[in-house]
Length: 177
Image 1: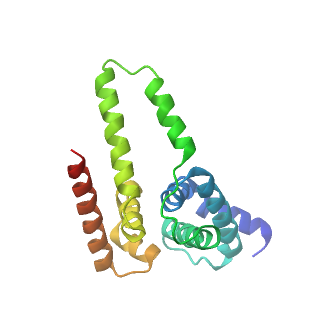
Image 2: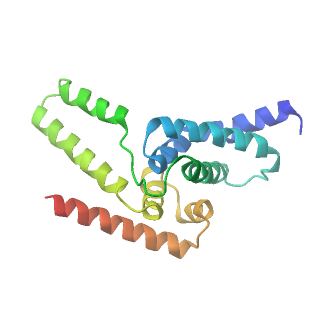
């Protein structure tokens, strides 16, 4: 496959899924800058491997590369003792959102934003295997088979992890009340 064919194929297979790739990398790494680095490296890997892509579910193929790249990146750049790093840009955006004028009902907007922050914190505090399964299913909308392919586990394991992740989030949110 020549470089032109690879570029065209990359544009058709990988480019449509860059938002999902970034979203997954963001949840795995915990912050925007690291997620951007991971997606850039994943795109390089995908471009190098596009000739070997035999078709099928291109979204699952791309997200598998992103997931593997993210874990490789974490092993190289973070101590295993580091569980979560706050995203300073997200904190700044939240502060700006809190200062911005709300719609018709500022109290409702504030409550909704607080609920969103609590939900994001609950998801972020999940163990990685539960968090990635929950994010792939409930944020990115992948089906069980796609998640099983991406995470390289049986479908039953995906279903079990998803149920446990949801239960933990519900328990955490209930404990906060």
